Image (cartoon, rainbow, N blue to C red):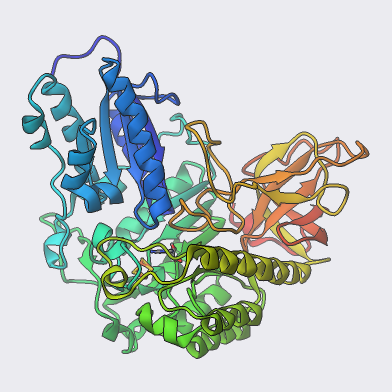
Length: 568
Ligand code: 5AD
Ligand code: SF4
């Protein structure tokens, strides 16, 4: 390819979950290394890429509207390459190309290692007929439930992650690391098993290595990602490459979890993986993981969490419904009683562990009585927050073919709002338990003025309830709770935490905002002379007041020798 006079510019926008955010980060690193330059303006970029999400319809609609914007650029005669990446590319495929002729390439989540080649192909064939260009689109559904998944170039994409400390964004102290791809669960409402394929686990050595390199580059907090992260399980000695390195491997069926897996020497269970990361990387201040599946979360994992102080005591474990009838129709594989039993085990072993989840309201056939069961489950568990979604029928799922979407939109909305209100009460109570306690906070940002919640100002959610409009949304916003319709997984982005200005300007000064190990949002009022609490610092805070969304406090000397301090 002739070297272009100036580097091609790329605009990349991400929809949906943390998996997508991580994929986008890897894409950025990969394309940057090849000379592409990333810009924030979709209207001038040479290449526009949308990394899409199919989990709910609204997220898809948003992506479709973006395609329209680029269509206009093309109609105006501009030369621009438009690529659709991620789950919509995988699910919509040929249909999308038919409906949106402006799309030049599709690349499913299992094909991202091929993206540079696909872009290159489009660039080389500019002027070729549409028919020829479509033939170059990403070949989908490559992943399968066989060990062919082990021959996995995607692994290289994760491993080749850029660790250049001078690269843009490398000053971040938090990073995601994927441990498992795909999902084997087939909840009836969910597109993920179709779009991301079967569960494939990465070799533990690759994961430890990646985490070590991130920590060497300055990362303090790593979140391990998997759709059902506690199902991580790697059996050694099954598949190696020509150099003897272990390869990714397809996950076992649920039956494997019935046997005492952690007892086997040739298996790295999730508990063992956590323990390895904790013990082998002492400078890693925080280890988190999302998302857990309520079944098969063994006591071995809870015991490792109890024994390892740098593993955050936070479990995001979606219940989805409190009604056994609906859980069955969802094919979740557990009952309300089993969910509560799990919560009891968490509380016995880790009394200070925070719990969060997801719920779907308005699933087909959900009656008022079923919904009341959900309300009572939310009240029965001290959830720090829940992400609440209105059921959205998704093409390709069992639910859309088997069940009629019979709960009227209005009823879905009412249930959604009622559950949000109940959750706000539950969150306020869960937060109140932290009053007077010390928590360790990883600071994410500083604000120059504003007031502490409960001291003249309140934390509020963005009234748009998760809608992020336009191409200019803030790079990092924070979802607290709500119907976050364009989000596939929590903690990714969405509702922005903002502070109401105090009514009278009685309080000025700086505030630091960060999260505790239990993922609670903490606002810290800083004294004028405190210059050392910038983003990325780990500080101890004494909680002085609490509200439904945030804890508020002041810096305190570390009450006990912090494991973090001794580690770093
Ligand atoms: N409709 C509504 N919510 C859904 N989720 C997944 N699929 C759907 C759907 N079809 C929610 C679940 C899941 C979260 C990521 O998104 O609560 O945990
Ligand atoms: Fe898998 Fe989670 Fe989707 Fe169920 S909801 S199929 S566990 S990704």
